[in-house]
Length: 250
Image (spheres, rainbow, N blue to C red):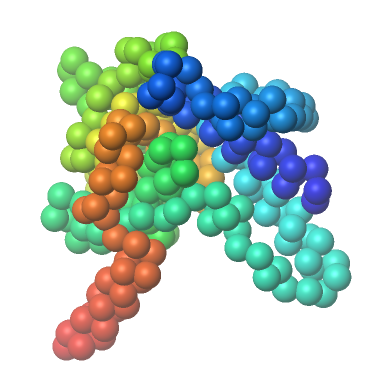
């Protein structure tokens, strides 16, 4: 259990160091930040080599969660600590995206500005036993999210996204099609190509391995980027209201 928890904590420290912008004075990093980086331990290597992208860290969440659950089960004690996703990320929600009922998105925001775009728990794709037929990152004839190439410290080449920018389209076996939007402004860091080969992980592990994309908001917008989103408590109230409205409908 300890190895997986330590792995994720070190990965978060690495992301904080990698993405933190230079300090305004002198164009370099602050002395305090340099001191933290000097103490930064090397990333551990496991069965999967750490590549330095978010997908590796998100996959480790499931492993760590499984270890914690097994340890708790062996001791007969229910885990009191929050999940590792909730420990390191703040959940924000966008309900009824583009006016489509229940097509809710969840944005996992880390303190280093990274936003991981996922499906919310009440999204139709995670309900009603739907089967995903295909996932397509080709947004238009001239735009594919798979062609997004990011390089350098300033993330050159990254596609810029608005709140309503489509990330992918998901088709189901029943003929329904759903569009997943960015919900936040920023640069597209990466898309999750793993869900193209195995769409079921989007439904099985939507907050970890089944994420849609990673977006990095502008530094000056990192505080305001969530102004139009709902907190977890506010979103839960929306879901409860929906349920009550359905029960009252004859």
